Image 1 (tube, rainbow over the protein chains, first blue to last red):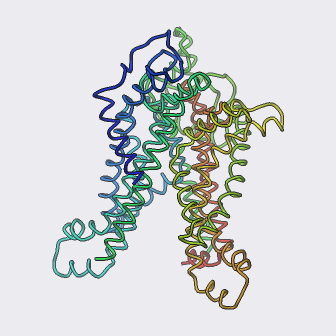
Image 2 (image 1 turned 30 degrees about the vertical axis):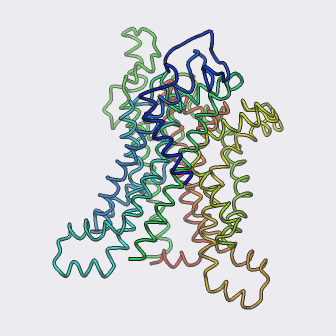
Image 3 (image 1 turned 90 degrees about the vertical axis):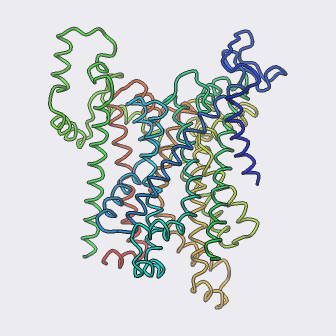
Length: 263
Length: 317
């Protein structure tokens, strides 16, 4: 429940951060630079005297929306190809398995760093890259679940009744593998948010001076003796968002799979 | 198909994988915006003679596959060319940065095994109990907190507030180096330990439901004997097979942790060469790390054949 509340809070922050912030997030004031918390600036100021709280709120949307897109994209691609490979087997399956084997044996973060750094991608290209790197994992999951399902008697029964393959997949198999898919969206979201803020933390994939969580964390580390809140709050925000999403994902999975067992 | 055939097939697969990676690494960096020429010139205004000399030296006008072939032949001999920023050979640079990463990785690995194997084992045995719930909660936390965030929180608490441990740089000499690596290693351990504990717990759960455990209990064997001889040994296999996964998260984690703690290791080398568009170094480090991962995966497969006779039958098919 705590986890759900925190995810809700982050969502509210993401929206509210665009509409209203306690202070102008881009307003500089060198006289107030790198100060600790005060009544005017609840979380203090950064090295250019900008209000940390406002910048964090402003950065929430870009920190969260990219990973949400990654998670959804991963789910759509992974589910579609996973159903195909798992249901039909054969050559499609072999190709798809080889692809995911290749990506399984590579350090995922390393590739992301190298590609983003070398090709110099922007925000949405980073999203596309992460989807490309992550969907094989979802695919493998959906594929093995589909294989289990498509051998069960009810699939055979539907086939015998002359239900076309496409309908069997979408109406019979899909509902039964959906708990895994739903739980996996949240776990993919976690992976994506970690990867995203890692890239921005390293100064890749976002503009300098933006208010991304990762960028703020990197800037905050330099000021850790002057205004530690600037480092701690983004670190906690990232960690707590990820933990809450994982807990929610696990919970969904337990609940949905318990329900499908009752049926 | 015999056992030798299986091993040969896996070896061939590892080689194929390595080839695919090398092609991607070379192709990617060659496709980078801004030609290699501008990177090699490093911002100097070029004279036509310089351009011609560089083209000649690096064979930049050759067809792509010819360039790739030449690069691959050198790479097999561990020659990745010369860093376009530092001016020394890439192999030399890797040799210089590798020890820190290796020491950090070794410390984190030992630390995480010490913590997580017992934790996972006891959690799996006392399923649903207080310890199990605590361990499960901690693994969720550990697996989903990014290493850089954990690192900064640790820096703040142990380095800034309590100032008990150094938080910056690698230190000089053996003892000093060890002290400097404590915090980074702890940071890395949190993620790793969570993975290992989860694996150990899951495999212990499966093992504890087996008939031979029930039978051993019925025979009146001491719980300690059951634990060590029956449960630990049989839950070890899935943990060993996850070594490849561990290594991947170790490398990814090390890249970030080295950045947080300003450690001059391979991770920092790759991040700085990415920022400076130092193509030969990027290619070299990526290839070396990929080689380590692929070799580990292969070794793990061989090892599991050795540990568990059942996989040998499966391999024979």
